[in-house]
Image (cartoon, rainbow over all chains, first blue to last red; front, side, top):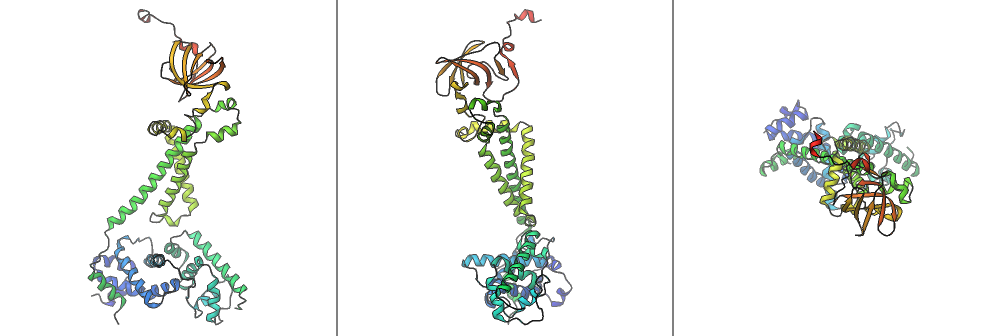
Length: 194
Length: 254
């Protein structure tokens, strides 16, 4: 077994190289990404924690199987998020249903993070009510949800989003701009005062 | 409660899961690039044959066909080959998107470069005479090809003796200026030349040669030839008179 200290000063990429030699190091990568990916899966798939953890196991096993495919041109986090994104989509395909309303951040975090974006110029100090958030999210197009999650909640930059969703940078920028515009329109239509 | 990391490691160890070897990913990447390149080459071949067919169509004939230049252009486009070109440019784009970093490039850029690649390579192949060779090979190998593709072998254009266009196969050569042609309907024509008749190389006045003749119909089975072209590969112009070389006894050649 690997001790926690042995992983501390290692980068993700170093841990990948070490895992190829000794599978025990994979536990360090799993520990680093368990919380982040659980949150991400719950945000984009409306899964509960149990389902998200089942999915997470599949994601990590898939990542382990494909470790030799990891491209050093990418950040490890982009690579593992990409696997998570693809796994969530493939699980949607298996169940043949995509959740209509993504319930992420019904406590208001979502709008609080987005409000900080200068294009939207919303009141960042304001507390958001769950029903207000839901009213906005229900009307947001599916294709915009995930880019907004990655940009505002996961804190990914355009290049990382491009690598995760496997879309060109220009397309990512367009999606984010359109998502923000749609969000602003919905907020105005819903007459939510921010 | 057991940590997820430990749970996953247990699963990996219990099920003896191993990372897939590097060569499998390398093979996958190489296959995608190979399919991409093959698609580009097929697109280039399609363009090269299209170019050959388009350029070798009888552009001076539309006046005999009672059509306009635009009309003639429209019926001269080798649609099947162009469809093949478009299909393989799209397949190339699809393959490119599956290369390791293919997703980073905008579709219009990839399609644009695929088109440019196919056109440039196709033009190069055409300059090497590949268009003709491929067209001949496909034409010989696929019996339905001539019905599908315009224009080099289109027989209907040359089946209008009343409009001055006669096509068919030489069945008899009576003398250097008089021969017999069997047209595509099976009718026999006595074709006559004058001193002004123009021939195009590499025409050979022998039985079995397929020819295209522009001229004038006289009576039910006589056709006066103004121009005679080989069925394929029209070359230099020559006068009939140049072909008729007087007989020289071998001893005088030295």
